[in-house]
Length: 344
Image (cartoon, rainbow, N blue to C red; front, top):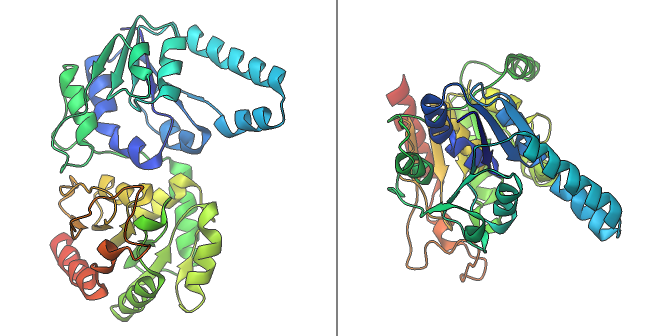
């Protein structure tokens, strides 16, 4: 294999989960040129990964803007350029780790002779030369990516979850920590994600932050630009909370997490980074099916399964989110003490 194309267009958490697969791929093909196709939001994560040679982006939102404005010629030119960029790779193999129509099309358009799809659906299976059904132990973090590696005969490490952070991001994190006058014991809270049924409750976060501060932690809240309004509202009644939501790059947020004494978050990419970085990390799960083994000796998942769990994108509780209500502040604080003692 001289050239390999990986396609996983989004999202942050899944890119973190793919790390055992990517490193196993590099181990088997040490001289291959590995290129990744993704959406712009996750490019920085992949740019920092030394086993990847090149990152190509598909600016989906920009293309949707062309479509909305009926700028069909500009859309066609952009499509033709991206197809040409993929063809120029002369890929021997394209691996679609997303398994959707939108990712399968790009695997096919790349012209790769071998096209391998993970759990391909939405018609993407017809673009593949081989489809590998999702498998593995779903209780283990990144299990489906480890499984495809095994099915492809790649040497998967037992503890393969990994995240690379560049020096510039570490330096920026140090500046923010100094500016916030943060001491040694930093607690990072991550309240925000893409769907309301995965959220914990504002009152619970406020009580937790107050308890953490009483235990001597300096508390930092992280999140993306789209979370800024909710973060400002949440932090108004929490003096001393350092609110950096929307103020950091993705990798700077990761660098801050790498310095944390404890990380607490919902089912979101930044929380999964805590496990990848081997920090004491508590994941709060409700509507989504959790990994129970986070591949992190200092990590733990809090999840109280109900008869309706996991509801994923179709909650039937009338926005009560009963599964998240079962996670209490005392339970989280007891887990904080357990993990901090274990990692001391």
